[in-house]
Amino acid sequence: MIDYREIKVSDVDEVTRLYSKYLNGGDTISRSIEKAWKNGEYMGYVAEVDGKTAGIFTMRDGIVFTYPHPDIEAELAEFTKGKKIAYCDALLVLPEFREHGAGDTLAKMSADLLKARGYDFMMAEIWIYPDGRSPAKPVFEIMGKPIFTKRFDGFYRDLDKYKMSCPVCGKRCVCGAWVEIIEL
Image (cartoon, rainbow, N blue to C red; front, side):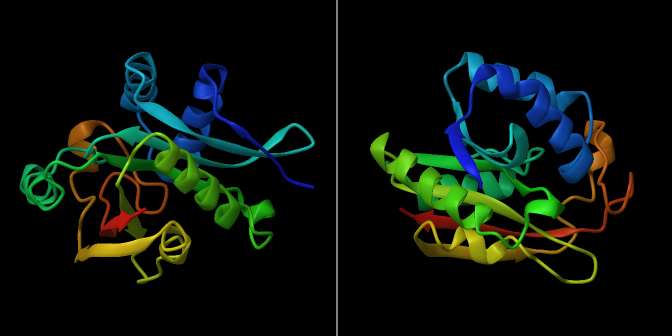
């Protein structure tokens, strides 16, 4: 049975470990999470099975990307002007717990949390693997209606400039991303 709970500051080390293994690694990740937590801008849920992390859905306040994309950030800021927006920092279900609905449940709970906190939108950069797959994309659409969707090939090509690496490509990432805004 999968249990769900709101994320706590004591989860930062585990979130950082999962980030490094499954998303993108680098020293900047834990510092970034800790800073967002201290500023009250970090929120989300943890899925657990027998006390072991099965998945996470974490969010931050505002328009944030893995690393800066000023042109896209400006476009999204104009698009959402005057509305409260959160960014999906990480959606991850460990391989052995996939296909059991954990991602869907984490997404629904996170959407409810954002609504309760007065958010209008959630933004996500959704990973596109080099083979074109984007397995997380359908999960985000559970949260609400996509009102902005744009594909960016080579979105993560500068990861190494920010001292991060891709778990699929290493330092020379060729992965792309869908950037979506979901109306909650």
